[in-house]
Image (tube, rainbow, N blue to C red; front, top):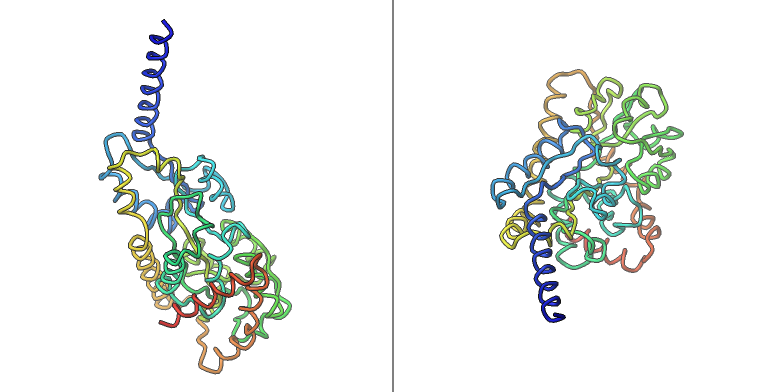
Length: 336
């Protein structure tokens, strides 16, 4: 009787495990984006990735985009994935200070001009093992960066560092505020959808951001001055819940592996850089905003004003020695 019961229990557990695994393989998986559906990363990156992956998955398994912060606010995206609220999400690592500390090295001025350059830095660091601890809880779909950020100003152009003295600007991160301090300005943290309103109301006099955000959020209507200096950049990531990934069939895991890593990151970077150039060209052709071009002396003035930035970044990290090593490696890759 006991043997029969144990056998039945074993069979039931096996069937339960099999059913759970089957459910994991077959269910619709949620992809979270804090951008609206028509936003650049939602439409050109996440939805494009979904459209490429879904036909390759086994029957019943699929990804679906949940845009516009439906599943949670921008700073919560990494935690949403870790907790399983979202299966995949677009994450800005610097929105959660300290969690992806070494990834933030690409914020140091002078390292990143294009997304391709920043993406090369992050993927090299990942392959070196320098970022392993930061992403231990995730399946990494892609690590990449924005292009270098421009200054978008409301009332007057920022041609020199002195032009920012005493101003409040929308900051992209905690370290962004450190950089503003070096320039005599102060940073204000504002969620992306609220930047337009705060520029219009004069809460901030400008923002540092990328051209696709300039178009998406119609910032040309309130900030018509663009300084072409590449001030800093932001790391970006597409992360997947590890348990969701591990619950997939071997065939579906293989699909995800094929659609993850350096090759996927480089594809994203190419889309990012192409779009950045196209948006800039369109605004230049329209002639409705003013582009401030910097000559060699102009660039040198910004470089001098931000000369302490690398040391500041290292000093802000919990492990300065590790940060110094990562910064040195990032500089090597940037200079290639």
